[in-house]
Length: 491
Image 1 (spheres, helix red, strand yellow):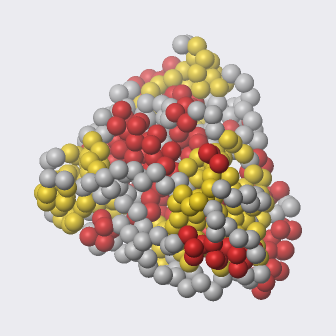
Image 2 (image 1 turned 120 degrees about the vertical axis):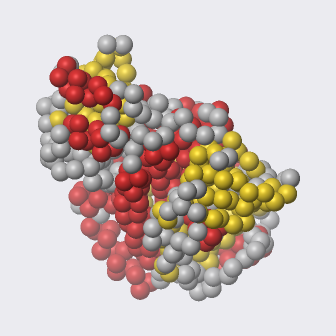
C-alpha cells in the first residue's frame, strides 16, 4: 500500500478531506491533475455552516477579517438569514482561490501528501484495495490504497472509471461568469431579472467586479476552452444596454444548469464527495459548501474504519446521511433556477412566493435550507431538539477555565460534554476515552436561542467529530454506551 487513502482532486472538498484524515492520524495522498492552483475566484464566500465548521477546526482564523452578512436570497428574492438565530451569517466575497489556498496550507501543515501534475487514468477495485493508474511528471505509474475518494469535480474521472451511475437532467442553457476590472457597474448583488434574462454584479477585493450573465434562449455548449470575453460583453449589452467591452477580463467562464447526482456515494472501496457526487446550478454558492460538508462527514468515519476502530457499517452512514442532503440541494437549486432564470410566465409564482416569504416560518424554512442549518441526521429517536443537528457555538466554563463547544471540536474527536458534573456518566463512557474527549463544563452564558441550543435541563451531549449531536440527556431513547458504540466502535 502506498497510503491507506488516496484522494483525487485538490479542490476544497479534497483538501478538507485530506486535513480531516490527517487530524485522525491517517496518511493520505492527494492526486491533482493541475500542476498549480488556477487562482480563479470561482465560488465566492461560504455559508454559515461552513463558517462554523472552519471555526471548529481552527481554520477560520487563517482568513483574517472577512466580510459577513445575514443577507441572502432564494431564487433572486431577498432573504434574511438572521431570522434563524441572529448569529447566522455567511462569509461574503471570499474567492474560492483564497479558500483553496488556506485549506491546502492547513492540510499540508498536518502532513497531507499533495502531488500536483498527477492525472488519474484508470481505477481498479479488487475488493482488498484500489489500484490507481496515474500519469505524473515522471511518467505512468500505479499507486495502491485501501480506499479511494473522488473529489475531482463534475466530470470526475474516478466516478466514471469506478462505474457510478450519475442520472439527472442535462443543461438547457449556458450562462457566463466573468471577473472584470476597469468598469463601474451598479451593484446587483442578488441579481436582476430582465426581459431577456438575468444579470448579477458584485464587488470583489482588489477593484475587481464579478458579473454573471444569463441570456434566455442560449443553448448549452460543451466547450474545451473558456468563452471569449467579447461573447460575454455582447450578451451583457443585449440584456442591459451597457457597453462593457473595454473592461479588462481577469477570468471568464461558462456554466450550465445541469442537475445530476450519483445514485450511491460508495461502491466497494471507492467513494465520491463534492461535485463528483452532485452537480447543479450554482444558486447561492451552495455547491462548494456542500462538498466541504461531504468531506467533514466522511473524514472521521473513513479514518475510524481505516484504523480498525469501527465496522464498515459506520462508513455506510456517509451515503445514508449525505445523499439526502445532495438530493435536497438539487431540488432547491432547480427551484431557484426556475424562479430566477425563467421569463415573464413565472412572474406570478415569484409574486406569490414573495408574499409567502413575509411569513416568518416560510422565511426560516428557506433560510435553513440554503444555509445547511436544517440538516438533521438519524442518530436515534428522542425528543431533544439538538438530536441529529449541528452543535452551535456555546461558551463554557470548565476545570481548565473558559472554553467553548467550538474549541472542543478542534482536534476532530468526539466530545462527551458533561454539563451536570456526573461521575456516573463519565464512568460509563470511560472505555471510549481514547476516541472521545470527556469534558465536564457548564454553560457560561445563555445561547442566542435557549430553547433550541442549550435547553436549561440538558445534562449531557455527545457530539460527533463533524459537530453533530449524536446523543443528549435527557431526551435520547438510546442508552449512552449504545450511542458511543454506534458512532465510535466497540470499546
